[in-house]
Length: 414
Image (tube, rainbow, N blue to C red; front, top):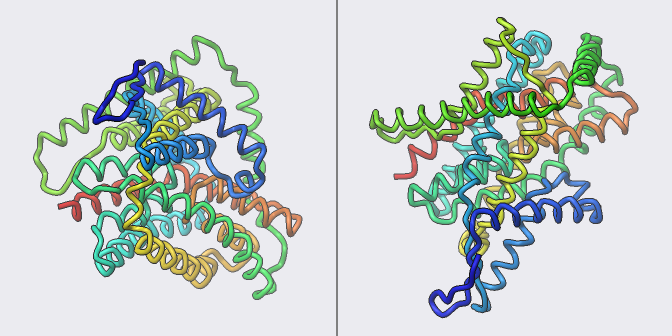
């Protein structure tokens, strides 16, 4: 860590250790601000986004005034990202599809359709508004179904292909989506319930028993140094596999196609998880996986937000707002007129529709918050919704969602 004069501006250069420490401190700041500011808690803002955004604003001010600059070494951002997507893959037990039954299949197919629809709509609107079509993808399923995690992941990938401002657009769209998803989810579900006189009862599918078994199993799991190191080794192997697979695909020279390392790591982890579910070769400690997931996404997002270039949004503000407003309106229509009917027009369907608005525009925590608000309002928890929506929104959607994003970026980046 040292000061230098670069282009006449005092620049503080932070090395890898200092940058990582700063990211951790900004995470703590995010926790503090979320606890103190009701707005941030109500709309389920991710903690690393809060702290990182505060830092990005200061960097923006320093840039405008030309008085100070900070240079960061975010080398560890990529490993943290790889680790997070690997933990997502390890949670992808396809055996749960059988438990969710027909409703899970319907909801999952809807999520997959939405990933394609949001990107198609975003590209079309971007072309109409005369901005780069990949920016429409950034304001499509990258930031909406994908949330801040995918925004911070695919934004830099798009910029490597020459799409300037992609990260800022993706992060801004994800933030807009968080708020819009929470504002629309609960009211839409309540409107469906009252309009169709939905009986307030939930299907007895045994999902409550499943959740109890999961809770009991997790209570028996302990976090030890040996167990942590074992899970770190498993995740590390999948990360290496993902990087190798990405490099191998690159050597094939396939036109308009790239395979990021985290995609290979995630799908490798999904395959490993489901093979292990059959063979029981080793124990996957879900508590340790969840802990590593929280730490890796927190540090990854914090570093991504620290590098956010807010000034790149200036010329894109109006086109971006138009795209996002249309995206919200289309999702409301799809959920209200299509998804609710496909799911059976009952109470469980209405609660799942609230969740669809949450993760269709924001992220899985928003979906859970929406469903919690509806359940609290009507005094009945839908175990069916609380299993299906998080499972689809956090894991299974990526089976199609991520390849879809990769395809759209590759197809329109040129």
